[in-house]
Structures are given as structure tokens and as C-alpha cells.
Length: 339
Image 1 (cartoon, rainbow, N blue to C red):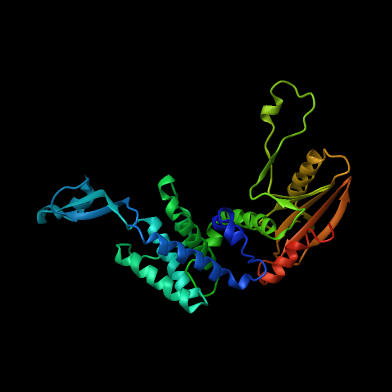
Image 2 (image 1 turned 45 degrees about the horizontal axis):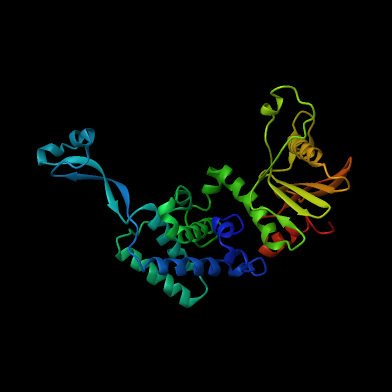
């Protein structure tokens, strides 16, 4: 989660903190970032946004909800059901920050940090932010604009704590449901986490970008209009050093296809064809070593197999995401071990 987060991508001080060497300190690090940013934010009045409200009022405000008014017979009591927008500090951004502070208050191992988180949380509540705890899924829907730059660091740290809360045994209530309901979201998190890990851990001369990369087809003498219809090639992770590239495609599924007709098993052909196409089209530098890795979460038995296909190396590997931080780190680093 840490390596996949906005906080890691946007904050150089967090990337340079060396958490890959001490993963157990992650919550304290993120909590410190959140609490410090929240304390600074509280030096100024909290931002206000228009929030949709529904109330039964004695005079019209905004729009009348005629259905509710007549269903509940409000007009006999001199009231109408109204829907209106009200400028308030109790909006999603501030709710996300206070929810992150709740997690920091509970989960940090540092007593002083827990007390600071509690003080900041209470100040947000006293300023008018409700005590409603925001789920990680709802926090994902938060969008930040130009006017929210002052809160960006707060929001990124709070969202990360909320996401991590889904995967712990003691924080949050959605952890057992949300991953199953939103598999696309977790697929993106898995991809971003692998990319962020290598960006943080690999030293020179290795280079890693913190985003997917697009590659052009090496077309020769294409007919009119053909280039326009060629699909975009996007690689998940590319590790580079002089004379070598390792192309990693993350797949949040099992590596094995079961063929019910004959009971046989094979690697998933579409994944292999995709990776081999990438390697073939990227082979433009004479003498450059190209390796392609299909990286899956481990579902059943561990898989780690390698073969030469033409001039390239193909590798299919699984990572046990239920293991400790140290074992996951070692498994990921084995991708470049011996390279």
C-alpha cells in the first residue's frame, strides 16, 4: 500500500525515509506526516465546501422535495422537506483527514504521536467536522482541486492510513469485503506497489519511472492510416540500467489456466503473448539484454520458472502477499538478483 500511494509518489521526503529497511515503522512514519500536516493546517481556518443537505423546514430553502413532503404529511405541520447546498467545514476532505487521525491515534506505537493525533482530531471536531468515520472506498472518491493544495499532504497521508486499515486485523470494518467488491482497484494498487517498491529500493545504475510507460510500434512502411489503428503498448514496470532492461507485467490473478476438456494446465497464453510482443518490439538496441517477467500474487503453489525465447528471457513468478514484509521484499528483489 505504501509504495502504491499518492504520498509516496508525491513526497520526496517520504520516499527517502528508508522504510523498505524497517517496514514495521510505516504506520508511525505516515502518522507523523499526517499529524504534522494537520497541525499546520489548523493554524488557519478550515476550508469550506458546499455540502448537500436535506431538512424539514418551516420555510422554503433550495428545492422542495414534494414526494417527501406529502408522504410524511409535513404540510399539515407547517413544514416542507427541502434539499439545498450549504457551505460547511463538514465535507469529505476534512472527514477523510479526521478519519486518518483516528487511525493514527489508535495504531501509532509512539505515545506522544498518539496524543498529538488525538488533539488534532478533537480540534477538527470542535471546528465543526462530524465524527463520521470515512471508509477507504469513500475516501478514494475524494478529488482535490487547485484550491486544496494546502490539504493535499494531509489527504494523501490520511487516505494511505485508511487503505492500510483495510489490510490489518485491528483497524477498520471493510477489510474483508472491499477487496472482493473492487478487484480493479486492488489490481491497480498491486501494480503501483510493485513499481513504487523498485523505485524506492533499486540504486544506481538502475532507473525506474513512477508511472506506466507507453511504447510505439516499430512499424516499417505502414500503409496509409495503419499507425492510427495500432493499439497502445503500455508496460507496467520497466527496470533499466546500461545494456539491460527488465520488463515486468503485474497480473492480479493466477498464472495458471485449467483446461477442463483434458484436465491440463498451462500458463495464461494472452499474458505470455502480450509480454513476448513487448519484448520483440522493444528490441532495438543491439546487444541489449531484455528480460520479461510476469509477476503474479501466489494463489496456490509458488511458481518461479524461466526460459529463453529467441534472444529474450521469459520468467513467470509468483509473490506470496500473505508473507512478512521482509519475505515479500526478498521475493521482489529476486527479480533483479543475478541480472
